Length: 114
Ligand SMILES: [Zn+2]
Ligand SMILES: [Zn+2]
Image (cartoon, rainbow, N blue to C red; front, side):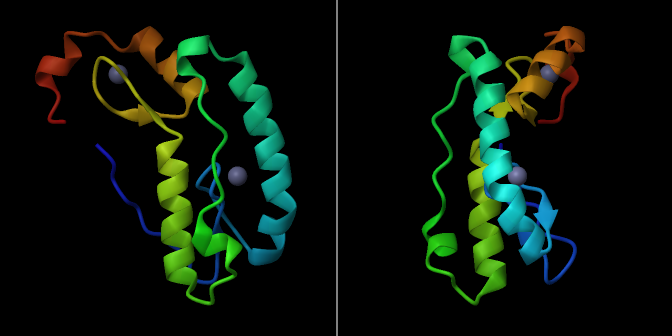
């Protein structure tokens, strides 16, 4: 269940790793730090939750002027980093998923709309 949420603020760029929005200048600074953080967090996860390093979408490498298309590609990439809860099917970043699953009970799934 992937729900695409378009960026709310025009002119902002989406980080392809965490899916957050930044000004284009800030994103250039943020991206390498975000990837570094991603590796640190990924290494802390239990083996079955570890993911392959996010690949930079082609649209971002090409330096396309179509901000909307670039942001969409970045969003899709960030969404692919999310993991679904085995109980309710909602998607989370892995560290959030571990926190969430402490309080999510399997019986909730029967009442879920998802
Ligand atoms: Zn990021
Ligand atoms: Zn859940």
